[in-house]
Length: 368
Ligand SMILES: NC(=O)c1ccc[n+]([C@@H]2O[C@H](COP(=O)([O-])OP(=O)(O)OC[C@H]3O[C@@H](n4cnc5c(N)ncnc54)[C@H](O)[C@@H]3O)[C@@H](O)[C@H]2O)c1
Image (cartoon, rainbow, N blue to C red):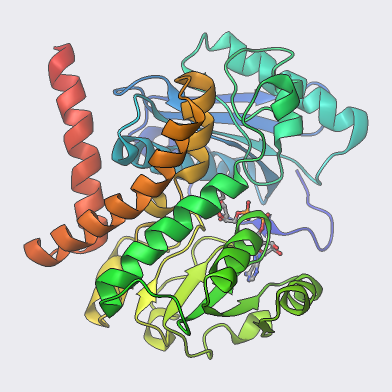
């Protein structure tokens, strides 16, 4: 699966496929070589303790099949925690479409149909949705082969693009975290650096600007950041300068793995709260942040708005007002998580992990 020059490739670790499958604590690793294109379809089902495994379908380029499986495992594991913390009756899963380059036209359609067939063959064990490089329009195609899919287009009866709901949930949680750290949720003049102004980051930057925050944006696509900055009247900085920018809040809304032993000592903020999945390179990074006195809101607690809307509307048939309430609830969840972390002298990550595992253990206990 050689990648073309210039395509962003995820390398993964050097572990073999066998090691990855043997060492994962998930329930199932499903792999299928696509018939139509040079692609590997892999689905990680991490846990069905709370219900069928739900989670998005990521399309991207990987160095190897092992790197793709590793990503599916990592993302599925995070979905288990996200859905458990949200209190939703679903487990965690994730699909990865590992492609040499992002397909368009018929090749894309054929690949999505094959994903639909694979999902259908699992009989409801896993329910798919959009993720990186896939959209609600793609989910309409997947739905031609399976009913186990959510976040289809509004025209097809789905909830549409989840990004606006994700951004709304992030803002609610971010305000609660600001109140916790700074003593007031007033955004007026509060400097927030938004890294990545794609589907979620752009919406978050707009919302925060409307509410009076002093927003600074950056993106590896520097033209995108500059355009947005001009349109909403904020400042853009070069993507590489994110560690040099002094701010109250750093809101990562781009890639994962950005917080590690190299970057954490250089952060110039008191709070890190953003939408990006898997922000920590390793678990110990939560302790490194705490040791520096920086409050970090676990990403899967803050970025649950999209899944709350998709699952709520399409799988649990919540009315619109219930969806809106649940998005605001992200703020209350973050506030109570941060309070508990302070009271118990634990990191917010440790508290979120306990919350998730308590819910999963309680569900297992009632089944026995
Ligand atoms: N879309 C959702 O509803 C949703 C839900 C939950 C979590 N997330 C997570 O939030 C993050 C953003 O999602 P999105 O849907 O907005 O993605 P997107 O692809 O629309 O936007 C990502 C943006 O980040 C930029 N970017 C990538 N790497 C960068 C880097 N190193 N520095 C600066 N900018 C960089 C890209 O150029 C792009 O503009 C991802 O980590 C995603 O997994 C998204």
